[in-house]
Image 1 (cartoon, helix red, strand yellow):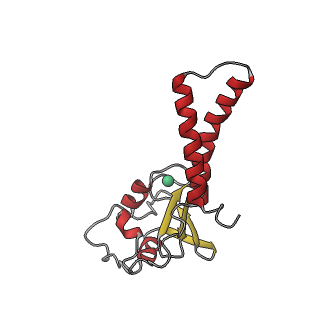
Image 2 (cartoon, rainbow, N blue to C red):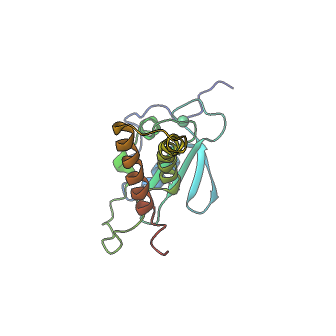
Image 3 (cartoon, rainbow, N blue to C red):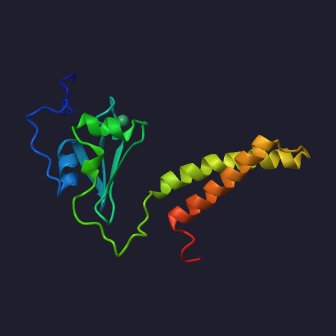
Length: 162
Ligand SMILES: [Zn+2]
């Protein structure tokens, strides 16, 4: 089948974006989104020739929407393909000031960031185990890695109850 099934580039015929329901707008412009569990959807990515559903959409408690293409498309490309912008992922309801501590980053992004930094730490540890000295630059980078890991732990909120 070679009829283009996905939504074409945005045109002036697109219905106006309902800023109170950005998720509905997004889902309506994707190809057959499925909802495997509450607050989660998967669909074919509109930004690349997607045979399997590679696009993951999640709605956070505060109404924000996370979009991720597992094939690696930048979120900006995915949004552009359906005529949306980053601002459309944020509902226009007043922010919940009572809960400013809501986790700002999905766990998988935090894990990925920590993973990169642990490689630095592991490399440095390998040097030290071999009895070699770290250069000034390596020591600086190691210090940065440790700071980033601590920051990631703080962002994730996993240390809050322990
Ligand atoms: Zn994609």
